Amino acid sequence: MTTLKQQVSLADYNTLRIDACAAWFCRIDSKAALISLLRTPAVTEKGGILVIGGGSNLVLTRDFPGLVLLNAIKGIDVVHQDSDSVMVSVGGGENWDAFVAYSLSQGWAGLENLSAIPGTVGAAPIQNIGAYGVELKDCLVSVSTVELVSGQVRQFDRQECEFGYRDSIFKKAEKDKHIITSVTFRLDKRPTLKLNYGEIRSEMDASRISEKELTPVQLRQLISTIRARKLPDPKVTPNVGSFFKNPVIGKKQLQTILESFPDLVYFPATDNDDVKLAAGWMIDRLGWKGKVLGMARVHSRQALVLTVREGHCEDLLTLAKSIQKDVSAHFGVVLEIEPRIV
Ligand SMILES: Cc1cc2nc3c(=O)[nH]c(=O)nc-3n(C[C@H](O)[C@H](O)[C@H](O)COP(=O)(O)OP(=O)(O)OC[C@H]3O[C@@H](n4cnc5c(N)ncnc54)[C@H](O)[C@@H]3O)c2cc1C
Image 1 (spheres, rainbow, N blue to C red):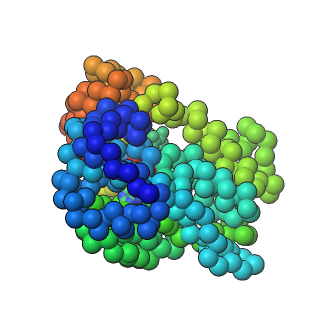
Image 2: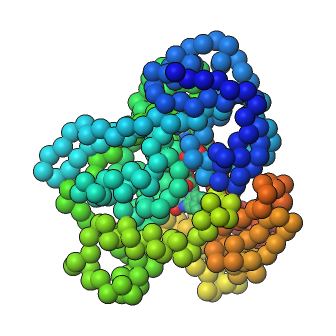
């Protein structure tokens, strides 16, 4: 049974620990309960709906006047399997990293590079989570949703999700229209490991593991170690991971920037001829690492991460704006904010 609560603090439901208040709040444990809730007219008239998973990609700037739905729909079901692969459907409220660990324990590979990313399975398609050369879309088959207005069940295959770099249809045409109830993945029983990104190879050398003997589980451990070294734990230091997306620009603009910054760090963009600039490098180059503004600060080990004390989101947003202005003035590129600002 679902219980609607009133005037609930969201401090425990977002990793910045911002103490915004939801006028209405409901934890959703099953699709059936969700549909029945959405078909109650008094509920849909409550001034808007905000879906929350782990709250690790959210900046709450004010109290929410409507209904917050906490997605807690669980379940991991094998839909189909053969000798090469398995298709598995996972409840949107499952913890992402726990599912990655579970899949590897079953001998299903593909998600190991996405280890140690906070949040839920249901939120992962929203921004097509990515890390260490892999994006969610590489293993995703389809997404099941319930439409918030109608309570209708919908399914989006991979192409319909319109995935891009930290982007999907759920951030564009279908923004705020659905709650993702489950995600179906195709995972490999015969893994092909992706090792050519970031510090994976140097970590392998340090751990004296050769490419030939490396297993997906070991790769998960290596990546978790690298991440723990570089990123602050949100339970200790409130943050939402990367605060800015890496800007994607054309080759011509790249040449112009290289004239002033020959040591600029950039990578090929995945889908076309463009390049992706390392936003963290640019922020660091302008001297922002470790800088403090009121209760907000640029993390001392990772310039892309902004941290905040005591939920002061005004200071956080002022700091973000100052960084955007400085990067635009020096590099001529716009830094887009990655987390959802509510
Ligand atoms: C330390 C740290 C490291 C991180 N590293 C990475 C990284 O390497 N790569 C990366 O891509 N991201 C990273 N992130 C960002 C974040 O973990 C991901 O975006 C994650 O998918 C967010 O999941 P969540 O459940 O916390 O979503 P929330 O923050 O709860 O929600 C994010 C957005 O999705 C919507 N939403 C959530 N669940 C649903 C649902 N079931 N249906 C519909 N809409 C929904 C919300 O309304 C909101 O707009 C990091 C964050 C932190 C704190």
